[in-house]
Length: 267
Image 1 (cartoon, helix red, strand yellow):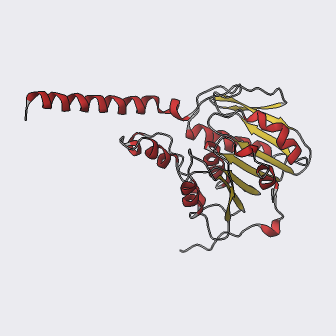
Image 2: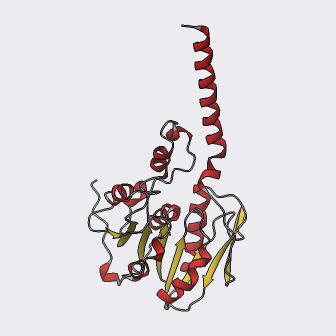
Image 3: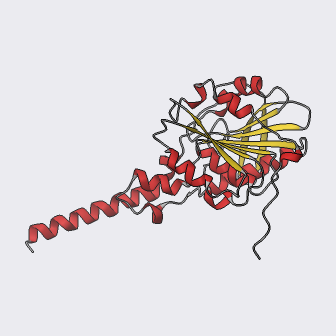
């Protein structure tokens, strides 16, 4: 083999290894895009052992509450006006991830999961009927929470089967499966969901393809989840559709008679 070819191959190998190293070190900068809070609204402060989490709030006294987890580049506070109109008899809790909207700390899968559990437990001291809603990245936070806490309803907006799967699709020439720290494997939690679940997907989503949402759907127990398609919309303009809020409104906090019983254990 000519020496120049050997050196060329070595250089390519070094470059490839260097890119893999950069992806490993800076991967969270490719997942999370912290946003400031643009809407001045009441807030709840959630004190965690290693961070202070801000939660945009619409207070409401009564049994019903809705917890919302947004996308990776979303200022969740901007949903308050629409959600207030759509859910007039619900208290609203919209969590700003670590590094977002005045929350301190750095986001990671495990940190967001811990913050979500702490928020749910705080909300549950005042409300008995808690709907959990997650959009895009937040769908992974929401489904994990609902697998561990008795949510009244779970709504997943543009959900994915796993973030690792999406990353492999985006970077097919790199060993993403080995490099990724935050995998958000929603399929792992779907089988533990026993409340009615609605998956809302966009027909023209080029970030989270419908196939990924459909794969996730297959992991739920029979009869628990349903998929609803919003036509002529993409990943980022889904909420502008006239069909969006009605799909969210439909069946939030269903009566106890609509709850789905967990399937019997195979053991």
